[in-house]
Amino acid sequence: MSPFEDGVARWRRVADEIRSAIGEGAIVDVLPSEVDLAERYGVNRHTVRRAIASLAAEGLLRAERGRGTFVSAAPKRAVYPIGPRTRFSESMLKQSLEPSGRLIRSERVVADTVLAGLLELRPGAPLHRLDSLSVVSGMPMSRSVSHFSAERFPGIIDAYAETGSITAALAREGVTDYRRRETRLTAERVTTKDADLLSCAPDAIVLISTAVDVDLEDRPIQSIRTKFLADRMELVLGPPDQSASGL
Amino acid sequence: MSPFEDGVARWRRVADEIRSAIGEGAIVDVLPSEVDLAERYGVNRHTVRRAIASLAAEGLLRAERGRGTFVSAAPKRAVYPIGPRTRFSESMLKQSLEPSGRLIRSERVVADTVLAGLLELRPGAPLHRLDSLSVVSGMPMSRSVSHFSAERFPGIIDAYAETGSITAALAREGVTDYRRRETRLTAERVTTKDADLLSCAPDAIVLISTAVDVDLEDRPIQSIRTKFLADRMELVLGPPDQSASGL
DNA sequence: ATTGGTTGTCCAGACAATTAGACAACATGG
DNA sequence: CCATGTTGTCTAATTGTCTGGACAACCAAT
Image (cartoon, rainbow over all chains, first blue to last red; front, side, top):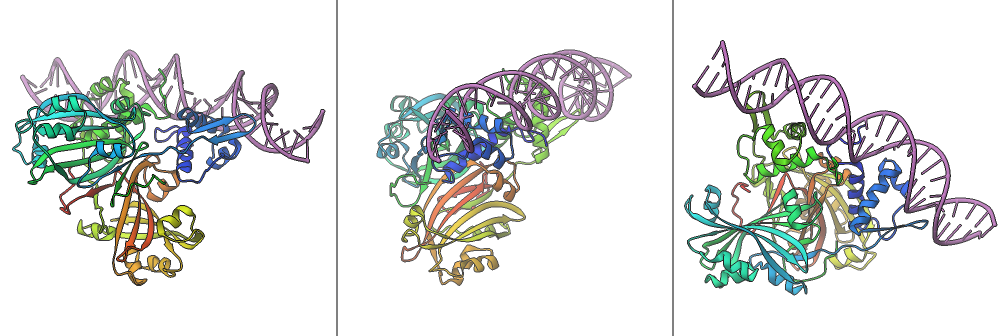
């Protein structure tokens, strides 16, 4: 059999399986020996070693010569409750995390048929495209692309650049309250460009949320497409009890 | 620079980017020429060709000699509305899809502290562990691991094996209605074992949903952890309007 | 001190990935 | 017809992956 087959190196697949095993609690404190792992995954010991080296570089494992290899810390994900009254900054503050938003790029575009449908505007209507990055306690968390009506919110870009919060920026534009109408969720591999912005592994996974926010009269305010780094975030739906992330 | 860097082949990364570009609507009908793509992604033309070959094998692209390369069909994801009244089989039927569940494995286990907490049982309580696969119109969609109290639902395994639906199985055990209390969402790479069961690429991505269902008296019924194939499913929260999946 | 089990390092070979260049086969528009 | 641009195929050379084997260094018991 060929070492590859689908463009993913064996050592990386082994690394992924070990990471999963740790995440699921199948491996708790100490790893099986390199020889055992090699046999279990059907690869050479060197391949296992490379996988372990990769995980050690992530800070997940710690190898000690003559003793064994140990898991150093189960990484905890930040929790993001998502529902009709979803507010990113508020959620992070409740977890004693420091949210901040950074403007990556802004642009004036015109609405295509899809965006026009979502925002209930005519195709060709002028829009503000807001490309932003959310950083929580120094760690990049997500990357969003929002679209606003340029006619209704002429100063939204500047307001966001100053406040770093969409809720705050909307308040300046006269929107005191809003709610989420619908959220669609899926997941994909991160693109290389996003990987740079989010400073994550080039093959990390992002949860993709596509949503429309509406004001109290149910008129669309913004269409927002957000990519959350899956290994740093956990989305929670349901009653707002803020228990710690377990599994 | 090395062909690899992180265990992912270049052609694979190019393939992923092209797939994303199609998913986001950046590439609509016809691909740029191989030479253009090679320049854009900074790789050799042969590498682009391999990426295209991989996507063509998936059925996403169709290359025609002398003319160009075209996207054959925007793959539509099955939509799964998720909320308090979430029912997998019903949702699929509404989309004219044929759901069926298959029992992979069942087992009697005892509750650890985490499961006991979720199900509000004492640690050590006997549980049924139900390991199942959901197939929709012949396509494996998700893989679930459920835990039920063995004392309260002694026949749940047999009931599921016969009906292929958890809702139907619970009805046989006397639970006429139930609702979802909380759902936690994240995403990971699929494990090789799950990749076999789901018959998908060995490095596909799964949306992981961890939830607890409760009866009308708010007593926990089951804890369920489901892995949805992200490229075949889209989770939707919010008002139940069943519009087609349009990113 | 010895023994057994562990991680760390080195060498070498077989195979895959990537690059480069050149040319063939085909389609389209002038 | 012909010029241009496209995908398909081939050879070759370079670099990285994976495997196999061997040995060193280290730890924890006996």
